[in-house]
Amino acid sequence: MANLLTIFRLCLIPLFVILIYSKYFTTAFIIFTLAALTDAFDGIIARRTGKVTELGKRLDPLADRLLVAAVTITLVLVKILPLWVLLVIGIRDLVMILGYVLLRYRNISPPEITLVGKTSSTFLSISMALFILRFKLAYWFLYPGIALSLISGLDYVNKGNSKMKKLSKVSKTKTLT
Image 1 (cartoon, helix red, strand yellow):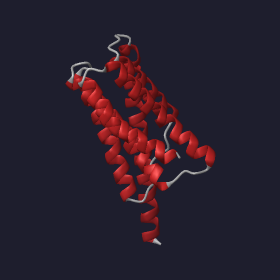
Image 2 (spheres, one colour):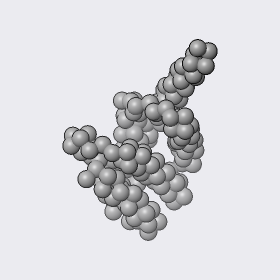
Image 3 (cartoon, rainbow, N blue to C red):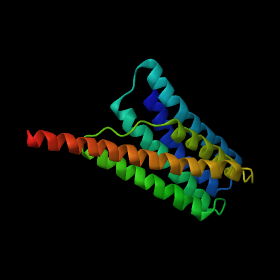
Image 4 (cartoon, rainbow, N blue to C red):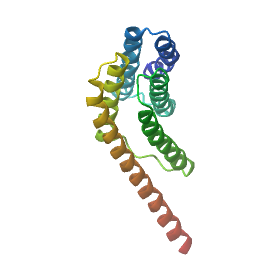
């Protein structure tokens, strides 16, 4: 069930883009809100039912990143969102994706999602929803969301580096003995 929600979220992305380009902002807002809610519920359902799968662990973050990318790129292209927001979020997400791939390549589990990371996602989702409706109030959620996103990004990078250093020390110790 949880994986189906994630797949459903992926299917909503092109619909959202089409609706924004067609200037159906209220409907796009509803679709975006539905996609954001599926992000919250798929994890809750998987954990509560004990059905956390490898597919879900990989698909959910991919769906999250694709939704964020689609929303920010689309809103920038239709001149609702400033370009600098796309650049900041895009660069942060690119660093996170590269770090994730590097850790997985070295068979290291990535750091757990933190409360700061979840809070930043919530603030950014609210701000995007408000931008879709073209409410200036969106900036009140955008700035803290970006600040928290950068803080959580630095935290994830530090935790990932620590994990790689620990693995390196263990490898050196095994080589020496």
